[in-house]
Amino acid sequence: MPDPSSPPLGTLFAIGGAEAKLRRREVLRAFVEAAGGAGARIAVVPTASSLGPEVVEVYRAVFATLGAAEVVALRPESRAEAQDPALAARLADMTAVFMTGGNQLKLSAFITGTAFGDAVVATHRRGAVVGGTSAGASILAEHMIAFGGSGSTPRQRMSQLSVGLGLLAGTVIDQHFAQRNRYGRLLSLVAQSPSLLGMGVDEDTAAVVSGGTRLEVVGRGAVTLVDGRHLVSNAWTAQPTAPLLVSGAALHVLPAGSSFDLATRTLIGHHTAVADVEVQETRAAEDDLRRLASEIAAEGISPTSYARHLRRGRRGAQSG
Image (cartoon, rainbow, N blue to C red; front, side, top):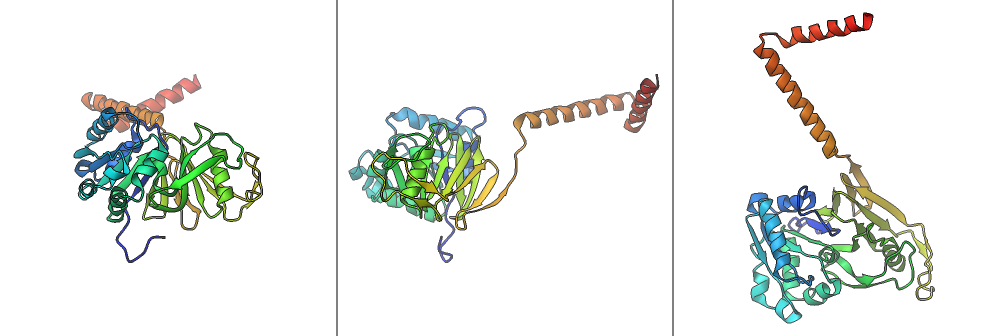
C-alpha cells in the first residue's frame, strides 16, 4: 500500500511482450499518452536485449510516430556501468522509462540494487511512468521470474525467482502468458509463496497500475491474476518436478476494459470496448446518412417530406 503522505506514484505498464508496433499500437499509444503525449521524454533501457542499437531505433521510431518529444537510450551493460551516478542522473528529467524484453536474469543482475536501479525507482516515486515489455515487465515486481518451464500443470521447482525493482509489492509478474502456456509456473510460484499475487500478462496486452493499487487492462489479450491467500498446497513436502497440489486459489481473468483493486484483490468493474469493425461500420453509415441529407437538400426536398415519401412507398409495396 502506498504511503498516503507521499506524492502520487507514477503509472506502471507491465506489457506481456510482442506488443503491436505497426497499425493499432494500442498498448504503446497508451504508454506515450500516460508519459505526457507530445511532451513525453522517454528513456529506453534495452539492457535485457541481445540485439544492438536496432532495438532502440525500433522504439525510437514508434514513440516518435506516436508523438513523443524525445527518446533516449540508456543501456548499462554491467553492474559497474549501472553504478555510474552520471548515467543514473540522466533519468532526472524523463517523464517515462521503458525497459525492453530479453534476458530476465541479465536485467535483474545488472540493474537491481544499483544507482541506476535506484534512479528508476525514484523516477516512479516522483510520478513518472515506468514500464517494460516481457523481461522489462517482470522486473517491475518485488519478485521476478528469472527463468522456468512451460505447461499447464504446476510442478515443484518449475521456475526460479530473482529480485525485482519492487515497484509492485507483493506481486510476481509473468509474460507471454497464454501464448507460451505459463499457467503452471505461475501457479507453482503462488503455491510456494501464497502471500504473492500472481499476475500473468498476455502478449500485446498491458496491466496498467495507477496509484499503486488500481489495475486496468489495455490491449488484445487478458491479464490473469492468481490470489493464493486461502490456498492449500503440498509445496513444502513435494519432490522435485512432482505435480503440486493447488486448491482454493482465486482466479481472475481480466480482458481489456477491466478494472481491479490490487489492495483488496477485487474486481472494480468492466466495460466491453466496441470492436473496430463495428466502429467502422457505424462511421460508414453516418457518412451515408450525411451524404443522403446533402443530396436531399440539393433537390429542395425537406428530409421530413422525403422520409414520409419512403414510408408511403414501403406500405404500398406491402399491400401489393
